[in-house]
Length: 79
Image 1: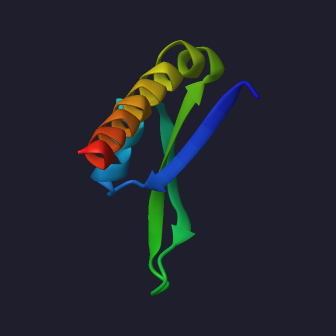
Image 2 (image 1 turned 180 degrees about the vertical axis):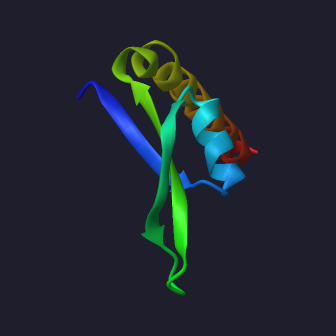
């Protein structure tokens, strides 16, 4: 796998921010490409992250964050 693609509602700023925060880059907007449950059409934003970016920074950062959470949980259990 060379890249991972993500899509979100173009108005969902929380999801877009989260994807950008891990290094995803915006590739474009798919206009009126999907439906809401009420039948209204929506635009989707497409973001992606490449394998090199993932392995060099994002994966390491996520593992570090997970390690810190694990340490906190163990400390609470001892506690």
